[in-house]
Image (tube, rainbow, N blue to C red):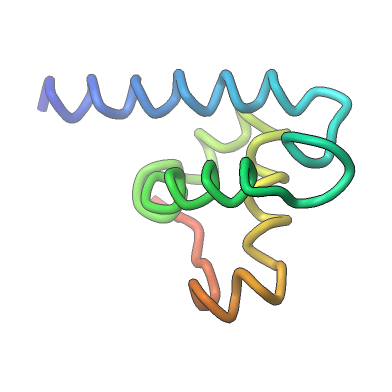
Length: 88
């Protein structure tokens, strides 16, 4: 259980940095989706769908909104399918 908790803490630390990076921005670089967004999205796909439930996501509103915005893009849906966020 300790290793799981350590892994979740590491993920939260990553998302906290992402959340801070998104202050006053819609995308990571510039005014539209870039490779930076896609790369970060794919690395956070598993945590957002299996680990970061609604309670945790509330602590990172900018990162959560960014992830959901990307998940709703037609090009992302064509490749990844409909993204279902972690519930609990």
